Length: 327
Image 1 (cartoon, rainbow, N blue to C red):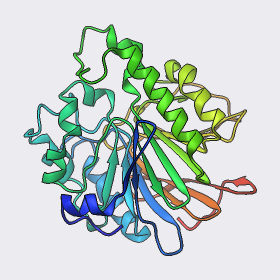
Image 2 (spheres, rainbow, N blue to C red):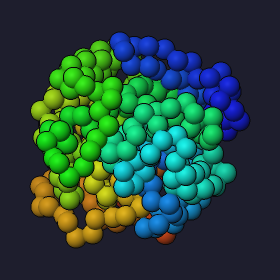
Image 3 (tube, rainbow, N blue to C red):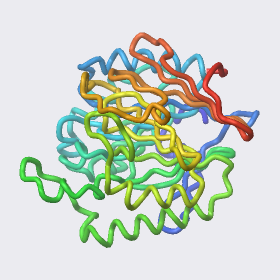
């Protein structure tokens, strides 16, 4: 899809459908049916902690790839989200940082736990899209792009500790009663995945399912979301939360667990041991992920803040391999 010039064009360029209770957006793909995108998470620090360096390399890679859109895995604004829709952090951490022409494409974002510590509704407000038309953030939704569907899931309400800790306050408007919210969300995700005829199914959430990073596994998602992903033959689960780059291969399904949470401040030195047969790549530093999906293949690459490719991985209809790709 070409760069969106105004909110009105945004509405015209995307067909919005409701599957279950999830909104579905349609994003145009390239003439050969392929789609290319970048993934970054845990970034919003007014350009500090190497956020600007990551953004610079994203711009270079995005131009080379001719990306169609960018995915944010959440924790969009530190330390505590936005105060309101007039918070200058929106410009200072987003608009004024991701300035490269190649990044002026649609951004598809989810909320992270730090976003819930502020005014969560501000990030969901169409007012922000009017101020920077590449911005789109919703709690949970779907994105259809060619032969691929992306399912964005609001994972913060799943974590028990956020409802018991006293150190931080969270904006739970629209989430309570929590049990009903989670039950309905899981049902909607399951319905949407079952209804999908896409060749490639990708689920995005802020929190890890499995991770060797500082935060580690999210047991609530292991118990409640993972069975739905496995039952519906999901190919990739992409998250942030741990400030690293990572790929873990499922031992009992096609799932790959991908972490792209290196958008700014990184958690250096907090790596937990993991089965080497499952841990395919781990980098405890800043960077981002790039993806290309064609008719019969997914190509992924992880980049650091110098633009170096740290790891490549591909999956085709017939087999999975690590090695060269078009990225």
